[in-house]
Image (cartoon, rainbow, N blue to C red; front, side):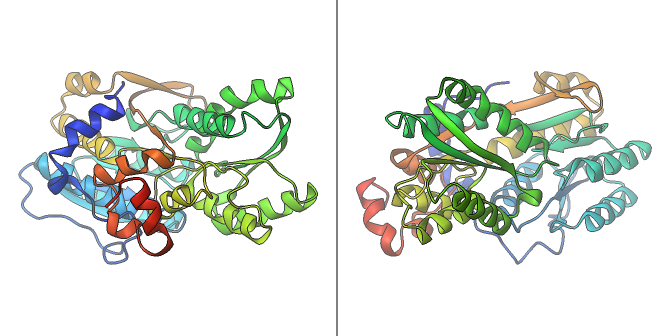
Length: 373
């Protein structure tokens, strides 16, 4: 399933900004320990479990408020919890929601193992599950809502290729996401669709590609520093799977006087990532309009809560392959968008980031140059 073009999204959402702006994409600490049910949802309660806050600001800054709003609009109470990276806590939260009899369980799992176990428990209790953002390999959820994650990787790969188009034989290090996260696998697949032909032809040279357990930013920075040192302190470009890893890599580049000289990719269009793009320390990030993802999930929830499989199938017109489970999962796959310096304003205009958050200190004149006020 394809969404509108980025320009069309901007036009469509512009009139809705007072209602849809999430206000912040930095981690929120005031509501991660308790649910956020609104009370009085005519259609019952929906359980949502988010994975963590340590490696990405998106879950609390974007997904929580946007899922809350989308589910409320569909007439549900939303019990939204965050497992804070703790697999046992994820399972315990799910047990509580299943015992409470939620109408549907939406799972953004820490890894496929816990996601699969939770989905199996919910299925036994007769509760439909939706894999949200991450497909649980070997799982049993009938539906999956995410972005086209191979396309995310292609945008990252193309961004780096564009940045290095005049650097024949440019040396590249790839710092990838967690090997237990199927999305990270898909990002890498997409990157290689663009970059592998360049590696094969010698246009670019791959120094090393390294996945990072748990998307751990600190570990990602340490691994990158070791690889940089092992390569004689020389590198021409870096694939970073998200903005958190990109930030850790940029810290190392700064120590070596290389920031702004070595293009770095990213993902999630976080405040810090966008600041780095404006500064020129990060070449690009990938923007995923999470409002669209939350609303798609809420529409699927509404159909499944009524047992309306025909409507659910009409929403999930794409498909995803689960190689571990040897199955095809009906999916809603939304379009991501590449953001370089000249596109940062569009993310602000859509309300995903406030100019007041983005444009302080040394970034203020850079925002002014891009018309961000």
